[in-house]
Amino acid sequence: MSTPSTSPDEFTYKAAGVDIAEAASLVGDIGVLRGRTEGKRRLMQSFGLFAATYDLSGYKEPVIMTGCDGVGTKLELLLEHDLLETAGKDLVAMNVNDILTTGGDPLMFLDYVGIGRIDKTQIKRLIAGMAEHLESCDCILAGGETAEMPGIVPDGVVELSGFCVGAAEKKDLIDPNTIEVGDVLVGYPSDGFHANGWSLIRKILKAFPGEVSRDELVALLAPTRLYHDVVAGLRAASVSIRAMAHITGGGLPENLERLLGDKGADLRIPRWELGAVPKVLSHVEDQEAVKTFNMGWGWVAVVPAAKADTATGFHTGAKVLGEIVGRHGVRVQVG
Image 1 (tube, rainbow, N blue to C red):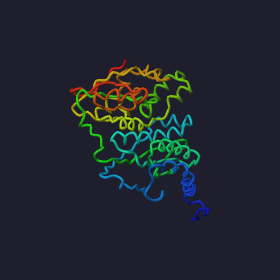
Image 2: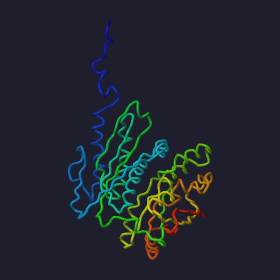
Image 3: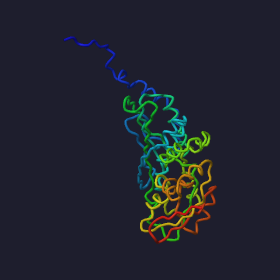
Image 4: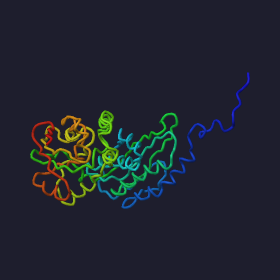
């Protein structure tokens, strides 16, 4: 029986679709972008080792917090409209904002990018978006993983996950157990739908083609905003923060109920009139929209009623949305 002839180069990792040299060169290419994220904070050891290290000796009683998240189905539209930098920003904000709710400082961020074949330009644009958001909140891009997976990740698709590590002094941790009946909930505006609810939005766009123009859709795809400025503003104004919530999947009710225990909240929010948002929401019942979207409020802080004016005064668009009540559950009225 004859043995099929094979080329010496046929059974190599590169021939199987994975180019290690290309992946290694990418690390050097993103060095400048990554370096921008080391300003006030720096890694303890060199970047590029098997794990990243950060010196916590500046804290007296450090507590660390971690989180991970992705961009969800919004990513499909971001790729379709070539908004790669926005995808990178979304990935950072979905993780950093969660760390901020604890009272912690976001210290280090790591990304995971899964792709069928390495496209250095595409990946550098994703990293550029990440770096811009991370630089603005003094969080280090500490490392990550780019996985080239031919045959597993289809062409034109990118998988994204993010991971953030934060720290705080033990005494500075925010404790939702301090929430009292009569406290108020202050909302801080979002820049759009952020990175939640896009499975429903995509269904609406498919059912009503042409109702939302391309320019309007691009505006709706605005990146998830960071709320580090809100937290800094509350601290600078010496507002006693009972709790903070990042309004993501589940909307105001689910995200606030995590904090309230046996208490509840009554909220009244205005109709969301941003850009083409009303066109999308016209196809969704109010209570379904409230359970799905942030409804224009990406961040909510619970503060004493006496501090309501202080908590709204430093930030344009901030508004008291409601108050804490003794009954379990969050009720949201629109209009």
